[in-house]
Image (cartoon, rainbow, N blue to C red; front, side):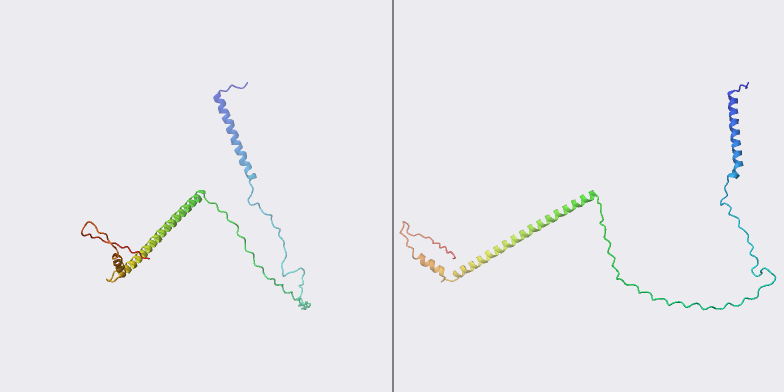
Length: 207
């Protein structure tokens, strides 16, 4: 029969088992680590040694004498190369100008509205300025026309005055003679008063 262990002893036993397993796992990993390590870079293949012998010493006891100089052999005559055809010169075509792609611009709606408002205000100011200039021009024309009419009337009045003044400038003027001759033709009836005085007014019209 297993001995009954207290909870404290069971807890300590469990800790001991876990610790033992952990220590043994680390030991196994350390033992397998050299076998799992891959050399970087891996070792290359070993070369093979080849003995080619000495270059000046051959096999045998006698050495070969100096070799006769090789006869110079004239190279066979080579056919003359055929003349290459001249390349055909073609007029170069001018590259066509690249077509410009239309640029699509996007504007801020508020900026567009502000620009339209400013353009409208500028047109209104220009229209008011044109109307004001037209009014000033009309007033200036009216004043000039009035001044010309007044000057013309004054000139006519001065001319008429000079003409009438010329008629009365001497004692023997024509209008005075006509007035006197007409006044002498009048006949007055007798009245109650012994003496009466009066005037006769003549109005001449220039035709």
